[in-house]
Image: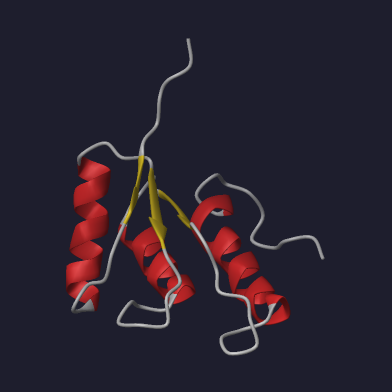
Length: 103
């Protein structure tokens, strides 16, 4: 039987320290994944927030549940490089994979 894993969609924090504490607490509680929305409000930008959560924890998977993609926010091209780097920094290096991604 496969193990069930649970994730949490996390809202805004007031500081990086508070954000890091949320990520550590979620991992300590046994959650497998932390996701963030991409809203043009008082949330942290998703990619830096996810990189910070990945740096703070040991095994927590991170991701977005949605990325804004319209003319007022950002294009797919502008989202692709940060997403690629996030994968590199958060997951691949933890698994002992090479520190580069194929192009």
